[in-house]
Length: 84
Image (cartoon, rainbow, N blue to C red):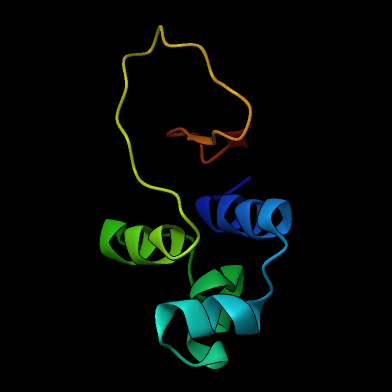
């Protein structure tokens, strides 16, 4: 799963739709839709990622490899997969 799908997984977990996330970010829904659309590119800047997930109460954290994942955490690795 790509980082964009991780954002959608957080949205699903928290029951937040595109329009609600857009309002939380102070953006229009087209902006959020475009950022999450995989057809518009696979990558997202850390600035945009941070802006989107902070609006939902998440943050970017770097931890050592040997830290066990906890419920509600999402891991993005260089193979573009995400686990929770």
